[in-house]
Length: 320
Length: 249
Image: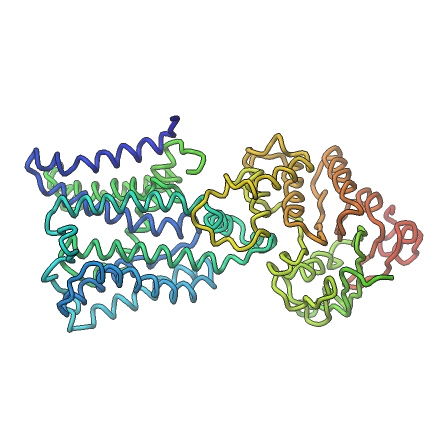
């Protein structure tokens, strides 16, 4: 088989992710299990955003909303003593899809700056709603008393089991996403991005397809939210903060929009850099103390000199 | 005479004080190539946009195949068989030539809520697309990204996409605009090959193209049609001559 460099790098990353638990155990560094699990959860959230932002050209500045809804679905049910994971995650996905349907139905009628501002406004509404409900911890959020329970099928309290579940889901969504963007649906989404007038002229109204993509992206990100709240064992409105939406956008852009491997590359590089700069012991204190500043310099350089993102530096296959 | 395929009556469209379409009556019969000519600013593009559905007229009716389509949106008209090409080349630049045409085939093959099978391996889309590329003479360039095609080839691809939507009526907006002599000659031959088989409304500046292709010509000046007739009648029309201020017709 003749694989493009981009595909090879993605496969190498996935193989590396598969051996992380064994290596973390061998070097007695359980922290790395935690770090890479977090990276994979953000990669799932970012690949859902990539579907609409990268392939669909819908620059949503509110994708953290679904991360938050997924997390709150799990956290609030836990608060009322409902720990069934199938139910919690099902509701996380369903509620996110529903919210995406409502937000999308309104926002997709607009474009450009208006679209960005509307998606941001909806997410800020949800964020302030989260901070204002004292029952669920308000600003502070609340701790999960128990992680999602799956009837003995899988125990999330076992770090490697949870890790491999997240890795499995990441691989699943990478594959599903690849199928989706090359299907008839995917081509319509991509075509509406590059030339909206033409798609109407050949007889397709892009609206229902864009809305469907928006709902799919919301649902997948809702699941990422359910994973994230189990990962931190803590639910907080910070999951929905606009800076989080910005971070997801940055992962997508850094990795390379409209590529399969981009969100994974972006999540890897951004979160590893954050970790390294903010104090992993590799770098001097004066870097650690002002790490956001150095991260900012890196991000500016990427946007200026690698305009198609990290994946853009590697030759891709025919289908990206 | 049989009912016209396209029947426009009393069409009006104003932008502020500018009456871009000022009471146009217009008919296109099945199988004919009907050219719309006129000096710059005569309202040709505004007119064609109302036919395609991009602009909503202020007054008047548009009937297509016996049905009132005045209020129908753009994409629905396209599905009924009224397809347009654009004055400014409007293709998917980051898709291959074949993908461009296959997408137009797909648009007329039912809804596109198919999430699973790879569209590019779907013979029911790529086979008809290949046939059209062969007819247009672009089959050797099928895998080239549209952005990398020459200007003339891009214009041909544009026509291929219109054909792929199996139109009953093609609205062609300046298909030879910006072309060199050789390229425009090839395009004229291409369009001549469609004559009789497809009904065409041709908006064009290039008089060689108009007089070699059109069965009938309508002349639009300041939003009004001042004359309609065969090429010979139009050549002889005094009012048309004065509108073009002595330009050679």
